[in-house]
Length: 114
Length: 111
Image 1: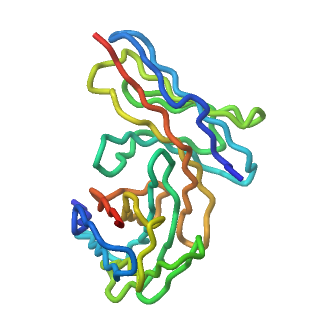
Image 2 (image 1 turned 120 degrees about the horizontal axis):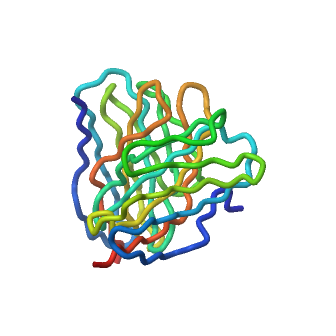
């Protein structure tokens, strides 16, 4: 059972335009959501996160939106730059004692074209 | 600042051979440590996590095991590798926050 889903395996956006990456989840016990960026043969890099008590979090060009009733979150990148080309993973967290267990989606490959 | 190391970076092993992957974290004490695997075309799957020395929780039953012999050292092992163990193995750490920080990964190919 895939609890975190990224239904778009790939996305192509022109430089300077907005990139919107989507993520859906099924487990209502998730209370924290994160986005990671990953280049080939490297570990994921943390980008931005949002608590379930908020509906928006912004950090520079990156904004994450959370719609709890729809169990949906999205990452907006404005403006998109060629260096943003990578695979983006959303992740959801549920606590296990003092550790945070992350459940990841399958990723969306973003290609920013000139 | 904190740094996380993994080695080796790449590994090619025959089926049935043993495995030992190592992860160490610098610049922090008593971190939570995690092992993930990314199979080809898949997301990251949590394999093990540890909240302290000798404390290991397993998420997926399989022929892999993990150990934490020191505070900032996390080891992933197998006695006999299967073809299905091929993948990209990632170690991660965090402290009190939800965000986890990942190492560079090990690419394992079982032949």
